[in-house]
Image: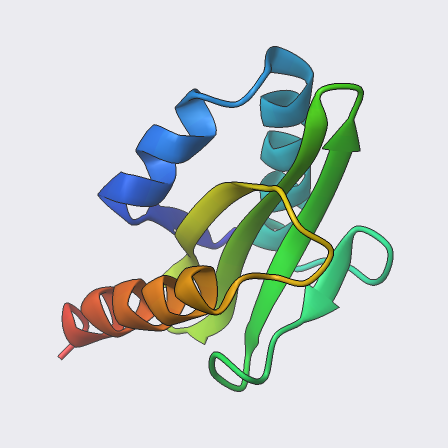
Length: 110
């Protein structure tokens, strides 16, 4: 089973999410660790961030939540960004922050 490696800011954001959202995210990340390939509507590729990057999409009565992950790392599943989504499109600021955080985690591999 692959490891799940969290960017500290992503871990902090996820901890602020409602309990049911955290449980759904946890199950999805566990499935990824076991090697399962997730698809829509739960997971969507995010090639604009990096080939191999994707987002987990969770919705509950309180809102819409996203967690970006990268599955092509030899170290495991990298969960590099998470946020509560407030608009229809993913804000450019969140995409840029995601790219920056993924680079930080990938840089640790060298």
